[in-house]
Amino acid sequence: MAVYALGELEPTIDPSAFVHPDAVVIGSVTIGPESSIWPGAVLRGDGGDIRVGARTSVQDNAVLHTTPEWPTIVGDGCVLGHLIHLEGCTIEDDVLIGNAAMVLHRSVIHSGAIVAANSVVLNDVDVPSGALAAGSPAVIKLDRANVEMIRDSAAAYVARLAQYRTGLRRID
Image (cartoon, rainbow, N blue to C red; front, side):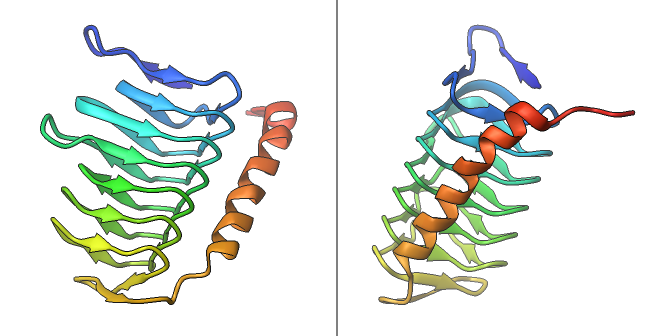
C-alpha cells in the first residue's frame, strides 16, 4: 500500500483497517478500526487533518483532501461512494455519500443523511439528519434518507474485509 509521511506528518491507521495496495494515504490522516480504503482512493492530508472513523468505507477512486483552515472529518459507519470528493467538510456518523458526489468547505452532513450520486454540496451547507441532498447544486429534501440502508451497506463493507485480508493476491 502507498502510505507516505510528509515531513513530520504521518498517517495513523488502525491495525484492523484495510487499505488496498493501490490506494494512497499521505500525511495527517487517521483511519479508524474496521474502515476500508479501496483501490485508487487518495487521502491527502498535506495541509490539514483528515479523520476517518470506524467501519467507514472509502470506495474506489474517492478523493479526500483538506485545507489548513478546515479539516475533513468523517464519522463512523459511513459509506463514501466511488469517485466522490470531500474537502474541508464534516460527515457525521451513518452517512452515505453517493457515487461521484462532492461535499465542499465547511459543509456538514449530519448523521443518517444521504448525498445523492452526482450531487454537489457547495460551501457552508448544512444537511440535516435524515435528509437527502440531491442535485448540482444540491437541494435538501427532509426525511428522505433511510439510515438502516446506510448501516446495512456499511456493515457489508466491514464483512468484506476478512475476504480481502486473506484472499487478495496479485497474479501478474
